[in-house]
Image (cartoon, rainbow, N blue to C red):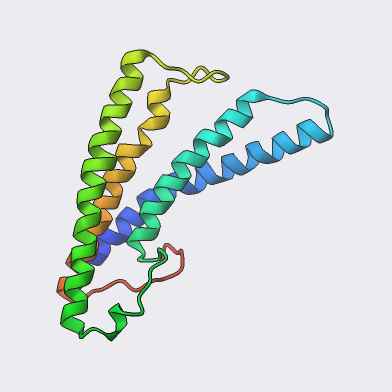
Length: 168
């Protein structure tokens, strides 16, 4: 059950992030081609690529956390007995839940609210900045879900090892 939830969350995150990455790449390629070969520049694609980069980065960070693929210094942890290591990993994941919920979730929600309240819009696309900022609480919620899944996996013996990116 836990693995299915984890897999479902992976599919949702990648279904959002992968097309965004493709569009971001297309915008960047267009910027290079239009500037150097056509002698023109479109601010729309530049701004869109920047906003998509923000979304892909934050969603990607959550995804990598769920895969336990972030850079970690594990030299000391590897020498601990399995029980102590599980407690350490659990404490780390719970700290991530707290950070994700309070800082990313709560702080991000406040930031989105302020941007909406002030009516901020992007210069080129005239997109409400609240849409761009909304990835902060979204990524906080996704990261917290991944962290809770990591805790559940640790305590049910279904621990996810660091793996490659795959929907299998």
